[in-house]
Length: 306
Image (cartoon, rainbow, N blue to C red; front, side, top):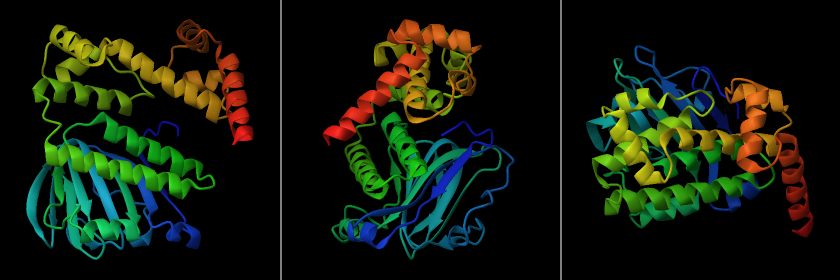
């Protein structure tokens, strides 16, 4: 999935009869970065998802909407208008009127995934989900962001049994969200939330560059404090952590795409293909081409065994 200058990517999936028999299927997954003073919602979504924030809408599916930046409001036929801030997850139910929007002066970043099926219906019947509790506080959680990102990758590839893979991701999300929101495991204090916020920002800018000193300023802390706290929390200095994220994405692109080394270095915003080559060889012991060949051979052998 390449970097999108508009900060928007989404996928609508086809669900066949066999997928429906599985008991949980995913209809849509996406990410939107809504900048301040930008109209909302954005265009180009199918008619079944048409949304007028002033009038609201009714969906035929469940949705999770996770806000990782900015502020806004949410309301439904069971929830009065409520303020929304980063770290909140909206739970939308089929057949229920709802509306939400970012504040014009702040905008927001939102991840979303839409799904349906008897498995989720049963969870609702057994009170694991509730229309009276639609705004869950999960805090800034990198694991949840990674699950949304993985769902987008799986949806983009749309391989055989992608729906069953996505169903597993949704169940993982649900278990994580219930655990964190109900047991307040996210309450690791202000330090933990700032570091989780920094990690999410780095994940969302992996195709760009992140100035870690500017990031500390954005989080309203000194760089010396941020660097020390980040390393204690993650085991990495902030700049090193960001480079590890880029390296992980480079490995994925090498094995899973046909893009050239030069293209990958450009996509990941390295200063040059030579610079990318040097860092990759130093960190992995392989040249990019060697890693691509090794990764594809390993994947092919695994498929033969299975």
